[in-house]
Amino acid sequence: MGYVSAVPPPRSDASAEPESEAPDSRSSRRSVAAALLLGALGATVVLLASGRVWARGTAAIGSDSLPLSADGRAVTGLPAALAIVGLAALVALFAVRGRSRLLVSGLLALSGLGAALSALFGSDGRSVLDAQAVRTTADSAAQVAGLTQTTWPYVTAAGAVLILAAGLLALRFGRGWPSMGGRYERDGGRRPRAAAAVDPDRPEDLWKALDRGEDPTTGPSGDRTR
Image 1 (cartoon, rainbow, N blue to C red):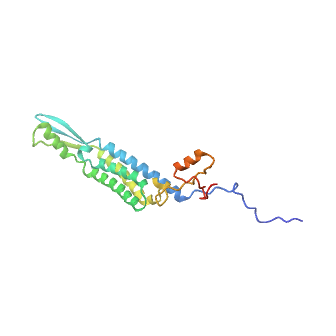
Image 2 (image 1 turned 120 degrees about the vertical axis):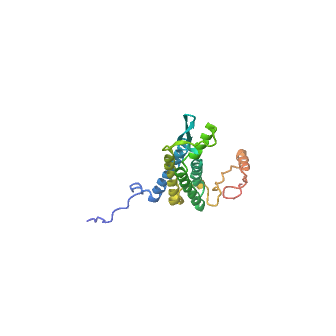
């Protein structure tokens, strides 16, 4: 009478279920994608919105009034400049590691914060329109009248907040992100390639080995060829 073993047979590798992806790897990829999207979108919004009209007013010329307007870059060029700094920092994140990446992440966050504050608190436009009124009327005492602001400074500030969010993500998760230098070894050099086999009976192989700076009289293991 035969016996049936109670121990189940081991599963082969083919029948084994694939291991699930590590949660840290998925989280790292999501944070990289989110930071890139937020940073690029925020910088684009800032650069476009800062070129729109931020302030409007009028200047009196006799009994008539002349409309005046100023775009964001005339009012303050700081948001656009900081958006460009943020874009450069976003690209540089993947070229550095360690503490350098932490510093670049801080620069990215600060550029977004500075662009947002300058868009909100430097968007009055009165001084720029006053200067336009003086030039238009040829009256050094002329001032802008009926000053109004558009919504574009707030759109600019919203784009800057996206840059700030990208910087905060980089500060929180940036240490686990890949870098463009990942194909190099830690000592900064390329991984050595195995020496190609040289057939001493083929002159073309000997010449190729000499061109590579190799000794064609030795094999891949360092033994002399016969």
